[in-house]
Image 1 (tube, rainbow, N blue to C red):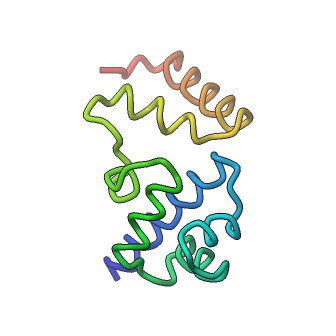
Image 2 (image 1 turned 90 degrees about the horizontal axis):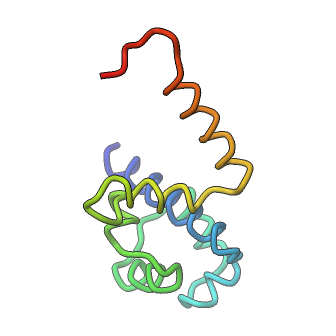
Image 3 (image 1 turned 135 degrees about the vertical axis):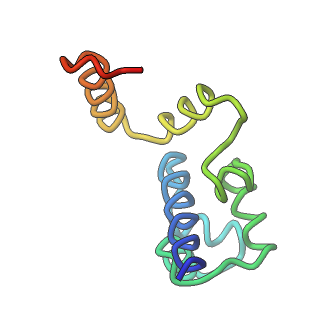
Length: 112
């Protein structure tokens, strides 16, 4: 069960990064030498990646293995937030901004 959930999380990170770069599943599949269906299965967490394919995906998506495995790109939290926000569409970034603004300016004064 734990391994399956890891595959799903890594698959979602691959999908988010691929979409942020404007790469289709077919393009990514061709770049790393697998069929389109394989990319879909990877992104949905239905299969595990071979190390060679994992490294090729990192190269094709211009990201580190650390990012795909842990979601962390750098040690600095602020840099990680910027990196994660850059993966979102403009509309999604506006939504995050509204949520942060509402959280910061809430009335209950429970911020530590």
